[in-house]
Image (cartoon, rainbow, N blue to C red; front, side, top):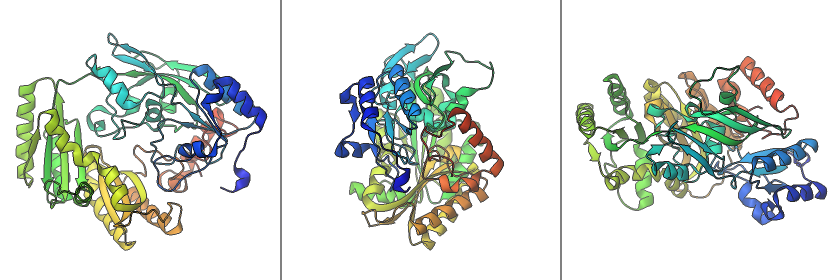
Length: 472
């Protein structure tokens, strides 16, 4: 982006924003701005003119009206955990951080609903719901830092998506602010609603390009009383895939079938400075079962364990207590930290294909990585076909290449081509954001893209709301 496209603000606009939210909730200092120049996507950053932290829908509305009147771009921001550069303020202007709007406003046990502000951290919501025996199923791995607003913007999923679905399956009402400051309410504590077009599902997953969410009504569920985790190490990805398919075909519906390729497990072991369990196995699965009947779960995990051994599993490790389950999940939870420490990561992709095509996907991606003298680190949600494919250079901890560098773009384009050729698409839950803008035409035809652009223009005719995202 050339400097002429970066939007700065004059002193009068800054003063008006300070009047709206209070001076201490506006950041203009260069050092303090740095945290808001990037998210968790390697290599993407841009400096905004200022960061504003509203505390209410009225303040959001006033800031957005002011920005609209002065043709100033606004980049909404939640927890800054995006992996598609969705929170990078590529046009400068204003970063609208919703971190102060972090209240759980209502937990309605009678209707199994909760009303929350967008800055509520997913993990904090989980703690609040747990006190009354409820839970919100979408569980991104970044749940201790990601926010509900970000979950809604990206239609986040997580390991439990196989059984419980993704964010859009739980949002029943929204309060949103449009680009000109208009406040709109959609839906409510309703399980059914076909009154007109479904604007809620349009906003969910729109990556902050259509409106800013200031309140969400979400469906919650009774918390399972029993959870059991199984660690299943196998010799190959093919074995792992066939085993997962057989579990589903046998009538089981685990909450989770999580996958880690052997290279990832060994890399985490190196990071932890100890050998990971079954580190020579090339495919590790975590199968999580939940429910309320302990005896029924025991019958189920015995059956699945037998199927695993017949499929070639080295062993089946059963975790019943919270401590044993945490040991099983430790390697999976440490992947992000380990890869940052042990390799220079040049691409972090979340690809999705039909479940039975995962072995082909991983083999082809491994070949692609080798051709470019890099390493594939593959892990993710085998139960729903969503594989996180990180590409990096082991043993180099410095990030020297940027994702926009020419050879990195070639690697990424080849990864996407492989995925699309297998009947998949280029993002399952991270979104297009800024990082995949140049590749969206691989996954969508011109007609689909044109229709989406028309929707964007209806909501945001001046292209002020999270500009530069999704579309070339």
